Image: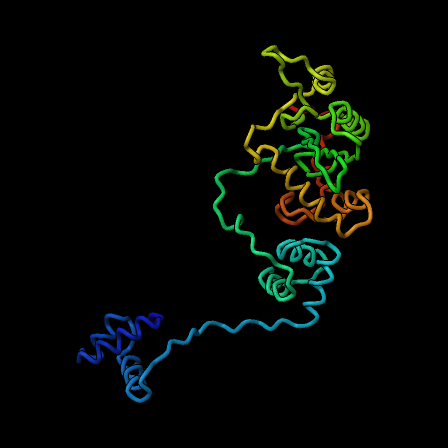
Length: 293
């Protein structure tokens, strides 16, 4: 038997008022004549027939659920419903992300993100192995200059540093420190800022700066993000936004980076379960004897 809506119920009543037979109405609506008569009888007695959704009632939200969700959110600042759901699942606790979203919304921890409602015109991509590509960029925070290097495949923070000035020399210093700890990347992606690339003067081709010379001498490919195309280096821009957000919850930048690398579960790194960037960096390393193509 077909499900009825308010519009269909109103149509049935109108047809009965026009003296159409119950059997004819039932045939058209794919319901029984008895059901048609019941609707019309109710209308004649009460003057109105309201449609009631017969769907199942929502399961209740218990205080224990709220406590677990709020504690997980406190442990992982800024985490959304999906991330919290998977964090709880790792601990053997099953609460749907829809219910978690309700709890977060009730606690005033949810903001509508209109960008997520818009269809993307681009597809996110990432390298398969760690050290295939590093993203580098500078940002300011409370009047100070910081540089960050993030591995593309794992989102692992290779290097983070504070400098008095954002210069090519300091960019090179940060890159060298990252290479000392984690080895040489195949490619490095930056923007077109003078911290990474020299600009032509008086219509003459510019000489490479110290940063560019180091990349060329060490066989590292320099990829420059497309101008006015934030998706090119969008992962790092998103990461910097996350860093600034997390700083409110931690005392030092070292604590922020440590949390991001080794404790904060990342939704985009693994299909079956969420893992930390530190775990992903180790998992995506080339095995001994393998070479990046």
